[in-house]
Length: 207
Length: 330
Image (cartoon, rainbow over all chains, first blue to last red; front, top):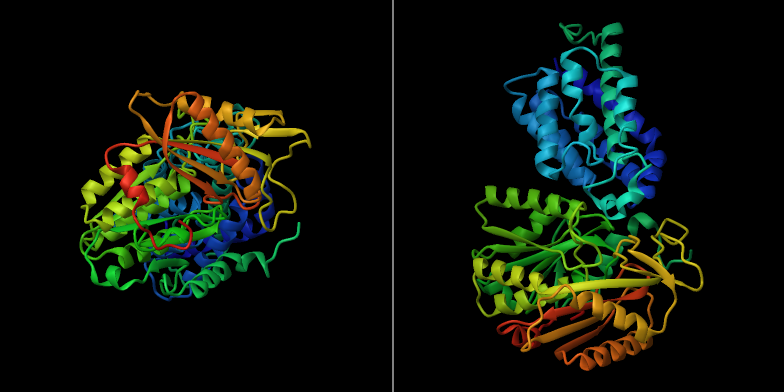
């Protein structure tokens, strides 16, 4: 269940991870792209955290605000990809708040927007596998790390790295790594809510 | 690396501000954006189809320098080498729409294509008619297994030919078809002696030895298809002409436009030496050239290198290329 409390803790944990790893992510991007993924994501997540200052937003409204923050502040390819995912999740959140379904909708939005296939060395190589892991309660930190690591031997078929051809092999995809961090943040937020449910939330433990 | 800047984060807004203040008779800044629009009375009062382009910064004078009568209606500057965001593009579309719709001229990069597509969707919610064409003139690489061919210096020919046609009253559908035809008949390859140094990064994007050059570079420091020993201008010209012509279906009646483009740190002296070799090589092959343009037109920050663009002219394109344009850079 994605409720307001989980969404806040999830984004706060992701923001913390992105700000910490800003230079690492940009460094990964410098190997096969243009070297700004960490900086762009950090700018975007600062804007995302700002959206939580608007009080009493539903999950759908909050997801939409997150989407627009990412779309308008991240730029490049990551902005529209992450932004499209959260925008479509926002539309769906009025019907379902089940996490596996929402993430699947987000993954579909990324595939539609970017036109990538599995194995093209993109963030989709992480997103595509997360819904089933959530559904079967097998999402783990190690599993996420493995998904990101899987992009290392892949040859890029989309984005700027694709022009490197075989030279893109042997490098992690920066978008896959930031996506790994997004879902690691979700795990952290879920664990955090179990141990210290938000007192303001009556059903803070119904995860 | 020394740069004439204040702070890296301020480069794009300060550049846009400086450009608009320098040429207030031609352009104005669209409020709350890093986009500019043409401000001549004929455009403001007219009903022509709007032409909007944009992309990451660092390629000046592309695209801001091509805003004005006879070319673009508006252009958006993104962060350095980073696509502008949909909200900014959307603002430029709204500025450019005078009821006849807006044509988006997008260079083929993943970020640009996605951000412009999202802006197009936003504008369509407002019932603004929008069409987009994607420029992919760089024939250094095959289109298979990549994002597709990149949009580089040939973009200015699309902007000029469509701009002149829009000024003459072409419809949105006609302009989209015309622009696509220009793209289909325009091919470019670039070479570099030194990669660009992106502000905030204190070294060139890739290393070349003192006696080396790179064939097939992109305008964002993308490496090319071959690193070779430095060669005379005539040898480079012959190689590029050969490779580019191989991508055309040549006809005896062909007439070509030639663009020799400096990539940012190439003295005009070298560009004209190279243009001289290109034109001599084309003459030797009995290829008729009826339009030539030389200069720093689509740059890659401070890359030392050139690109060569050939456009197989059709219909009235030659007239459209020579039509008047009141822009900063055409």
